[in-house]
Each structure stands twice: as C-alpha cells, then as structure tokens.
Length: 300
Length: 300
DNA sequence: CTGTTAGCGCTTTCAA
DNA sequence: TTGAAAGCGCTAACAG
Image (cartoon, rainbow over all chains, first blue to last red):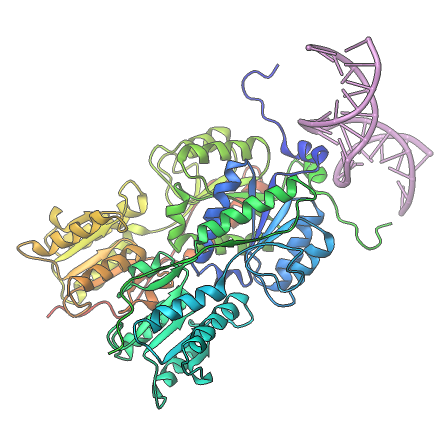
C-alpha cells in the first residue's frame, strides 16, 4: 500500500486533528529595526532548536507596523494556522497581548507582560538584579560617577535594568542624578548629542552602564571618535552578551542573559501549553552572569 | 450570516485549494552559525516585506545539520506545508537543491546554483565584478600589495569575489600571490594565526580585501590588537554593507550588495513561480555599489 | 484486529 | 441569483 513515496498531507491531517504542530513567532515592529539586533537571531536559534526536537514548525511574523502584526496574528489564530505563539517583546498596552489573552489562545512572552503578569506564562531574566550586579561591578572598581544609557524606555527590559542600576547606586550611597540618564535609539543621530552632553557636565561620569550590547557598540564608537579611551578614560558595561561584545575593541564586559536559553525555554513552555490545555501559567527566570572583558578599568 | 467573528479555516481552504500561501525559507546549516551573520536577518526582512504584501506567510527552517534541513524540506514539500521555497545558500553538491529540482518543486536560490544554473531561478549579485570593483578602489589609492581574506571557500560568494579580486590585480599588473590569500572562519582561533602570518611576510600587504563585513570586523579587531592602525598602516575593504560596517571604528568601506533587495526579489520571483506553473527560470542580478567610508587610506 | 464510514470546513460544481 | 451537494485527504469511531 504505502510503497515508495507516500507522504501524508498536513492540511488534511490538521483539519481533523485541529492542530498544526506549528507555532508563530512574533518579532516586534518594526521588524526591520528589531532584526538589526543580534538578540533576535539568537532567540530564534533557541526556539528553533526545541521546535525541531518536537517536530514542530515555525511561522515567522515580521510586520512593519503594529497594525500589520496585529492583523497577521489575528489571521494566524483564527485561521488556525498555528497552535500557539511566542511574543518576542512586551510593550505597554499591547493589542496583540490583549487579543491573545482575551481569546485564551496559548502564548508565551519572552520578557515581562505588562498586565496579567500571573496569568501569562513568560520567560525572562531578573533584569533588576542584573542591572544591580553589573552596576556593582563598576562600583567595585572604584567608580562613583556612573551614567546609564538605555534604549526605548517603554520596554520593560530597559525599565528593569535601569531600576537595578539606580538601586545599586543608592545602596552604595552614590549620587543618582537625572543628568546621568539617557534614553536613545543609538542609531539615530540624536544619541550622539546626548552622549556628548554627558561629558560636558560639571562632573562627567567615569563609568557607563548601557542597556544593550548593540547600543554599547554605538557608544563605544562614539567615545572613540570623541577621543575618549575605553577603558582608560571611561569604563563601559552592557547587557546581552551578544557575539559582538566579544569582537569589539575593547571587548565588552557584559551580562550574559542566555538569550538562546530564553528562546528554548519559551518554546518548551509553549508546546507544553498547547499540548496540555490547562497547563498553569508560570514565570520562568533564566539566571544571568557577568562576563568580564576589557571595557572596564579601575577608577584612577 | 457572517456577523462578527467569522474567520475562514486555512486548513480546510488549503486542502481544497492545494495551496497554502506559505513559503519556506531555508537557512544554511548550521543555522546557529549562520544566524550570527546580519546578512540573514536582512534578507529575511526583504523576503517578509513582499511576503506580507502578497498575503503570504513564511515558514522558517533552521536545521542544525544538513540532514535535519533535508528532512524538514522533505516534510514541508511532501506534506504540502508550503507552495515554494527560498534557499538562502548555494553549496556544492547540495542534497536539498537536488531534491527540489528533481521534484520540480518551485524554488529560488539566493546566490548562484552549483548545477542546472539555467534551470533554477536565482537572484544574486555580480560578485565577480564586485570583487574587481572593490579591489580597484584600493588600487586607485596606490595600494599594490593587497591581500584577500575569505570565508569558507566552498561557497560561491567567496569564490566569485576572490576571482574578481584576482582579476583586478592581474589587470593592474600586480603581484597575485598565494601567500596573500587566506580562508578562515574568523571566529575560530585559527584565523588569528593566519592574519599574523600575513604580516610576517617579507613584503606584507598594505591593503586587505575581506569577503564579508563580519569577517572584516574580526580582522579589524585583530589588527588593532596587533597594533596596526586602520587606515593609516593598512587599508581594509569588505562586502555586504551590513549595519555593522557603519558603526565600527573606523567605519568600513564596503560594497553594498543590497541584501534587502536580494530577499525581496527572491520572494517576488518565487511567488510568481508558484502562481504561474510555467514561469520560466531566470537569473536576477542585483546591482551593487561601493560605500566609501573610513577604513581606506592612500598608500604612503 | 482489520475494514468501512462519517465528518473536519471549506470551495467548486451543478441544479433549482 | 441562490442553494444544495460533492469532495479535497485525512483521522477516529464504529462495525464486521
């Protein structure tokens, strides 16, 4: 009967099984910007590793706008393209999250949900603690004037890491001034001015905590142009431990947030959820650790 | 009838329509390595832009091994998960290409197919010409001793770019020596030795053509560690014009191969092929141009 | 234990 | 123009 060359038709099977063994992965809009950050390829790797192991497939959604994403998610969910979705972002007042939650459709967030924190399975780092740890690593080297440069501040990562930075400062009885905090998309020209202003201050910082390796790379380049030497004149630390941070000159001290693991665990949790209807919501925290490299010097 | 809240079921529709309006995108194995290179996120962007416009979806295949990829492609094709596939690589003696071609399944290659070049639709740059052009840009600055550092040399990109480099040298009556050519995966420690050896030569190069921005970044970092100044001591050019090349210190002169366009055109061609059974095979060449930045100096 | 049948949700065809 | 019916390829339920 099934001699050479028979292959089941997925659509027919899915139709009756009411399951597609596919999951949707949603990249934040605008996808073109997001994909610039090595964070995403790396989560994707993590996700796809377990996806494959479980014989699932992966639909990638990369809308250009929030609206486009929302529509695609709607289509995917209602059309039963997919069994579940992984959200690679968490934003304040996000329609997609709202929708998925209302529909009671299986989904997990990589990051921290804005609302319904206890009802939505999410996998995240302890970004507050990570912010504290990395800031302390600067304090331990004698730095007392430490600035913070972060990306979009409607993102929880930024908020949490910044809060950790502030807490570390406070714990060490160090000045915690607004002048020392910058929020910028580093690729924009605006970022440059902000960094320059930092050094025009009466008492410029000797250390900088940057919320992301990619921004860190931009800052590094800026600093070099402005003729500051890292780590001699100024120390720099960041987050993510993306492969870039190893290659830069000097290499970056950064907190390794285990991006791959973030992806793998989220996929695992999602599949469990799709398989078992009433798998409870949970929060999965991936431990971080600091990777010490060459961008930090002792305060002299 | 169709008041609020009706959504067609894709599987039912696909079953009868014999079309899924989905395409598979195959990332070369091992996907984890490949995804490190910003090239892929960027093609993905290009692909997804037209995919969305046409209301198609995108299946991402990211196997860890050649075998895994092959199996997934088989599953996707036979199970009619997808209407067509985009191959993001072209390798010598590739099973996947062989399979797709034998099956007469719609697919396009980003790059140059090894066999059946005239029967397989592919979108590519003129990498030979690009290699020539970028090498000439070095020659025009007075450089006569120019080295070439390339990645895996079973990839057509590398081969073509290297051939262009050699042609430019020959055309200018310059020395074309084997000692000047290195093939390496820059992330491996081996690469370092190879670069060091270059400068131990009796007559070390004053310019380097690197086959890829990512490798370029690695070389840049190495050079800095070895205390060579770019562009003062040595000039560096590369390929791809990935966002990184703008951010490095110094920024990289590189050939812009329009990665986004590569992706967009391949998706467009594929969809045409899936829609129209006997759309003829074609070769689509995306024009390149050189982006001049700060990594090149005049030979002094 | 093997074989037959109903039905998944849609589109397309054909009849009214 | 509108409505009923057949069938896409499979799985699950049921009968033999």
